[in-house]
Image (tube, rainbow, N blue to C red):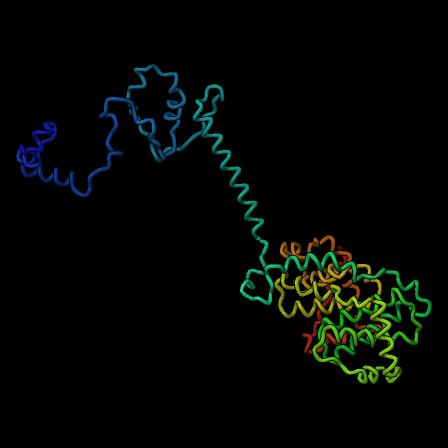
Length: 408
């Protein structure tokens, strides 16, 4: 016996243990103590004098007999508790539910049932969250964080300011009642003509929206004779070009497209009158400002963009659309265009978040746009229809109107 064996008399040295066995038994012992040694958890606990480990957890389903023994455990005598459990539940045995009175069920069983109920409730909540994730809210500025021109740091503040300031650029929807010599039909003819002039001069889109805004704001506070109405339109476009364009059309060109109905001096005099009447306030949020932001929220492509602008330019000609603020017009135009292309109602959570308008709030304005779309090719005011029937604008005017919006 080695020194270590003398200090530990309960341990038998490997050499002595092997020496006392014949070759066959030694082979069995080596095999038993080799790589295939059994884990301690597989040793029959009945060899140990005492109760099973109370912290052991069986992952196999409970049998009816075993569950009954566990439920009546507290009623056992002390000597019964010390007796080992002889029956081991079969993994193939069906697990049945024991219906007992809650007053007789041990506390840990009640806790287990409560825990299972909580897990089921959490699974239901997770399913609801998964359903909501079908239309997640998208951060539309995430891709522009490295672009200094996108001003991601304060873009939301900018549009909150635009939303508050848009009322300063709006006019009373019934201002034509104050005019003695012109009416809303004449206004429509003027704007339809300006749409063609804007297209012929290849001006920026912002210029058209600001031009119409200047006309309405001027006419809302100044009475104008019928023969001067076209002069107001030409002068408003000149002011808008000076504000938005890099290269401004010369006055002679504007006089020429007016069939020389006005002189150069008359244009300059009207420019002075208009700019003073408006108190030099040209910085107002037009529908175009909101269109760019809302189209980004809609994750639009070129087809949706052109169709949305077609919808909103139809509204520029219509006097009755003055009762809607620019932001709502822009949102409704995009919503109507999406319905046209998809064939069903569609307004994402991202669009609703960034526009602050729900689908219900857009429906009235959207239905009016559908009616304008249906009659765009008829009547005398066809400037917008002809403009968006060209390849440059993707033949957007030829897309079918979403008439199903009128049915709802």
